[in-house]
Length: 253
Image (cartoon, rainbow, N blue to C red):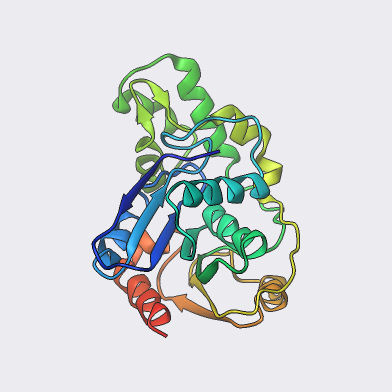
């Protein structure tokens, strides 16, 4: 499946950076990083399937998601590339290291591990999204009032509302809910022996447990894991300059 994208390139640029957002996101989510790097690299921001303006599908698993990204890169005739992925997008990025090992050069993974998770972080979010759908409303203010009964964090509500347009969610709520087990899942893959940068938020539990670090070491033996202080799971939104500094240092190696 070819995806909706924004591709920024200038004459003479030979390296392409691909940006992959997380669950309930869109291509704008990593826009600050893309804008900061687009003088040095061609930048490709992508709406993953069932998100943004990309097509909806009943299938939503990492093999399909990674193949979509490859289909889009093939459409643009991009042979070699680097990837930066956050959360679910980080898992897509890691799957690309398996299915396109020779084409992928550098890999940055933001606050996610190559492991199956049993932590259901999004049950209240799904309840909120469905309640908004069923209420048949049109404005973001109305949506906010409904969502506040399920979600305590204003920042999360504002993030979700970026994908609320003309009374509808741009992402495919039903498919994402039906495939939530696939989103949490991970199929262990062969080790990828190139340097990888993992960035973890100090206040996040996504890269925190011994099994998280073990899974990274086994599948990405040359990984560097750096912590972003005073940041949670949305580390690139909370501490953009620190995240950017780490990425630029890694890419320059």
